[in-house]
Length: 574
Ligand code: NOJ
Ligand code: CA
Image (cartoon, rainbow, N blue to C red; front, side):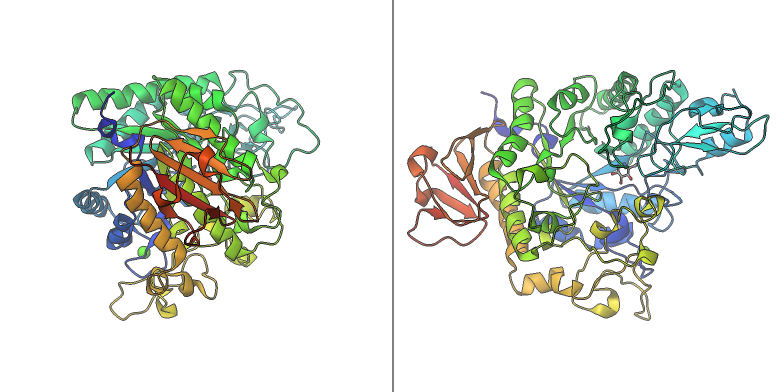
């Protein structure tokens, strides 16, 4: 058998997601920046991170916080400069940490020079052919070309003006500020080849590729068939068979693969990767399709992130990714949080979180049930202890190691997310998981988020931090040896010591009533998602209590029970 430790770094890496705007602000203007990240690298390293994924930090009007790119070859001025970026790459490299960027190929900003040129050019021009410009319906073209809805509310079409000679419409899957690029146009593919080249030359080791579900459309752009009566307003887009998970998209990814491989062949010392982002929950056939050898290296497994706290649901959420690993060798990309989803402490603390039907297939769907944050945090620890044992990549989102909850009570006039504004507040959106990070207990510096001004003053943080945020800061948690932060650090160490040398293979098995059990080589992990302590069936699990190497909660000495909402790791010596 091949040496298990000789696999590419991205088969079983710990990747820490940094939401640049909210991580750390080194010039005191209330907005996170690249120098701020550099100043906090020791914290990221302390978790055992192999790589950092940076949310988009390219120039952007920030209508969707960087997912509206106006120039793919530079750094957004609020975040710093290319020199600052280079300094971050080398400081990270000095700690053995690689940098992944976020690539946004499905759409650009309406301020991108291509789109500005398209508006200035005539219908049918090469400038418009990089996007989806179409004539409207109706006598004067006053109706949109079809009935497609935007993912963040409203029509997916925007008319550029009322001119009867050129009142064309353009397609934008998310917001009108994010016009969709037409990847059947070779110029578009060529742009992304150049983007790869530019950032790989600067030392970037790979990309998280945004919104791959919606790239590529049916060439005729037919009307979307009617959706079911219970379909949420933000779900309509994702049920459109003519604009979602299209073969035309896969053609684009084959081009991306070829570009990446071409660079890799010229730089054999590099191990480059790209991971696809799409919500393919409980649709393993899609993950298989996107990770065919001529496409992505891996695709996020969001099943565990969206699963209720319920035995069979958790088992099921692991089974598909593990089966794909088994059959195709594609490593799973596990994740419990990201910048689009309510934080796990709030999600799993909700009074309905243990109901199997609370499983959601919608990345924005929110349960309004009350949340017990202490319970949610305890469950989040158990979940973290589970994913750290699994084969594959772990994507951690900044602040989950602090046990941060979702901030739900942001005043409407401080909300920034276009999801909130484009649904007239019907959906609260994603600001609550993007609150600037608390590093210290000092309220005068926005809890250590903002530093750097000579006079010690700081600008207002771009999103308000709630009262008591400093109690959840790194400094406060370190002082009191807080259970979540200390568990994350122990998990990093224990993973490096025991899990990393285990095979890229794991099975979910029947470990007895009430518990979830997974075996990976000589590691056995047991989760008790129920509300009661459970007497472990050690025989069936094939373990003994003296093999315990880690538990997400304190265990009673001499007992063989697993407390409620707890995970235990056992390692046998053979
Ligand atoms: C997915 C990103 O994660 C999200 O933040 C963004 O709004 C959409 N794609 C559109 O780019
Ligand atoms: Ca700043």
